[in-house]
Length: 321
Image 1 (spheres, one colour):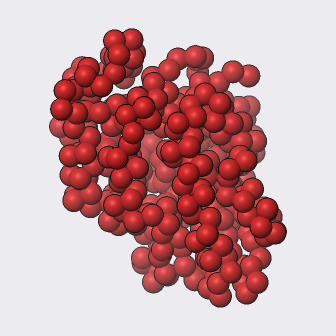
Image 2 (cartoon, rainbow, N blue to C red):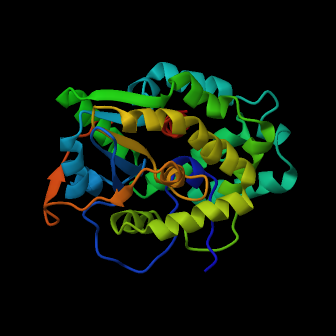
């Protein structure tokens, strides 16, 4: 089945494609690893979810209760600050505007997407391609009721702060923001091209994203990661493969430690030949799916209306202008 693959799927691990209806999973994208000293949990996060996702599957809540600390991609609190938002926006400005960054054909596709979303025609005019891609993606999901405040990262981060659990991350906020503000022009243009590509129809419905997450469709993620590698190799290397390699040594340190950790990163980071699951298995770690003890129980977790990644910051800043 041919599916449309958006550039933002690499960043947000959200574009799950279409699928038949399936039963909800009690522990979607959740695995456990027995380290030398204790058990740890690996979670494939979805950064944008609807309000209904505030009631998390019981398996995620159960595993969270068992851990001493939670590890994220970056410092969510710092990335949610106005200072980070202003830094991102400053790095997004294009001296000659978007027209000076892309060719006429890509610019025309951007305008077509803007018209379809019914957002201001000059939405991307001042900005670099990568920022335009993030902004268009966020707008599309916001229109369907998907926001960062209900994302798994945000909910778990807020719970960890409230419960006094240790919080750590793989990338400093400066490094995380630099993935975008320091993005090579070729990668930036490919990200935007992927975002506005139209090589098939109907595969970017946020409702389908939600169903795929709840039904734990790992095969779909694996397929989309491989599509990204084939169709958008620059994005794949920059936002997935390179980061996975840089995270691997620290990940192993956490898994070999005495404190039980929940490792929470975007779902796409776990899959594929360069994914973290493949790297852990190659190192001899035994990774198994988590099975919830009470599969019919749904546990609510608190959230706060703040942003979770540079992508969230990008979308909200652009909307407020």
